[in-house]
Image 1 (cartoon, chains in turn yellow, green):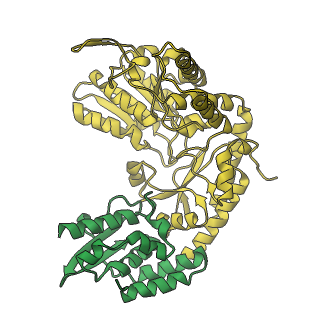
Image 2: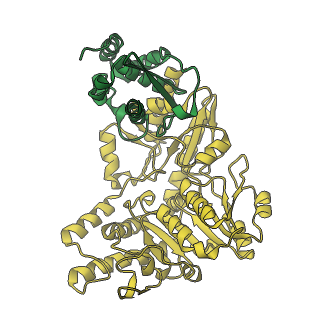
Image 3: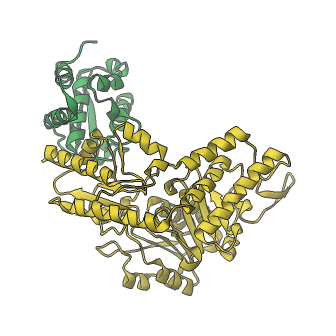
Amino acid sequence: MTLISPWRADFPGLRALDADGQTYLDSAATAQKPQALLDALLAYYTGGAANVHRAQHLPGERATRAFEATRDAAARWLNAASRDEIVFTRGATESLNLLAYGLEHVFEAGDEIVISAAEHHANLLPWQHLVARKSLKLVVLPLTPQGDIDPQQAAALIGPRTRLLALSQLSNVLGRWQDVQPLIRQARGQGALSVLDGAQAVVHGRQDVQALGCDFYVCSSHKLYGPDGVGLLYGRRDALQRLRHWQFGGEMVQQADYHASTLRPAPLGLEAGTPAVSGVIALGATLDYLGRLDAEAVAQHEAALHRLLLSGLHRYAGLRLLGEPHTALACFTVDGIHSGDLAHLLTEQGIAVRAGHHCAMPLLQRLGVNGAIRVSLGLYNDESDLRRFFTALDNALELLR
Amino acid sequence: MSLPDNAREALEAFNACAGWEQRARLLMQWGERLEPLPERHEADRVHGCESQVWLSGEQRDGHWHFRASSDARLIRGLLAVLLARVNGLNASELASLDISDWFAQLGLSRQLSPSRASGMNAVVQQMRRLIEAD
């Protein structure tokens, strides 16, 4: 039986790409958008735009209501204890930068920040620069050959100087779920804060921040089938209160004279300036759409597609996977063939996959590869997408060998 | 401006191509003709390419001569057709050369797209910097 996504028709972008001869297998970079999102954007703009949290007029009230409804939806989506624990940002990257500045005062010289070897640059560079600003030490947890954070080494490396632990829950290169809860508990035992980068994880299963036990959780809307330019920062109430304000301007202030100001607490105090009003509203519509899907059916479809992807790749002699992916994606190299060449020829055949270092240069260096091809899946992908990919891969390898 | 012989040859060969497979084979053949770089110096690394590329250039009697290298075969091909067009030109000829148009004539315009895929844009920019620095 051929695997067909019952949700594909909900995504007009895929229809357009199909018509263009393009097979989209790069959802880990950004996802296609459901019609519900487009409808919400159009409704907001054609219904009359207005700024949020300021004006008393009706359009302003309508916009604020819709905007704040997304905060409720996001809190429910992540199972936050309160809507006030959700901060809107421009994306996961901005959320992490907000943390690296907002928490700067927590650190003293010699303190340690712990990350894993699998981090995306977004969960590495903000900490790397914080380490340099405050003379801290960055500790990198090593991985097993499968791509897991090595639990024994982690147990030895998370110690009394650890002030913060920042881990990706699902790597954008390895596609492997990390067992983060024991590490978070261990960090908490040392009095350290914990940050989870859920940019990939939120897309492939509902996450529960209370069950995870993390202090902070970050993700981007655009990978979760939502609009770009919007991200979420979840902070547990007491953890969020430790954040200092980091950007200053309109909306985040209570009182101001020329020489001093009093600032609002989080979340609004961390949302200086006009936010992405339309984007936040459209994210709400996206979450509403996703919430109406049969989560079990989506999970089964994604798992079946991923099995097809892996079994297909295993047929090729000399093809090496990076780690042992659990879900969503597979990164690979082929012996004797430059991944740039492979990518070039896949592109020529209308296959949209990613090639290169996937914003994780240190990880690829550690794995001993210059670049890799990544095939990543969304809930709208079909078996037919994979068939076209494998045919193109056959053709490319035949040309290159 | 008349085309260098190498460039004329490339133009004829690429215009005779039917389909992506022939074009890819041709690119790889051209890549094999690329004059090798004796050494890959870090200073010659072109940043902004997903594949590693090195580029060096010098003037001989007022004419520019570039050499380039990459581990990727198709990138070597793109470098070869680029160098076929630019090598031997003087600075003012290079300044007025429309490189996008050259790639378009070869049916390779997508390779100069602003996304970093092939990095040819970064190569062209580095080439211009080398000329300006001279």
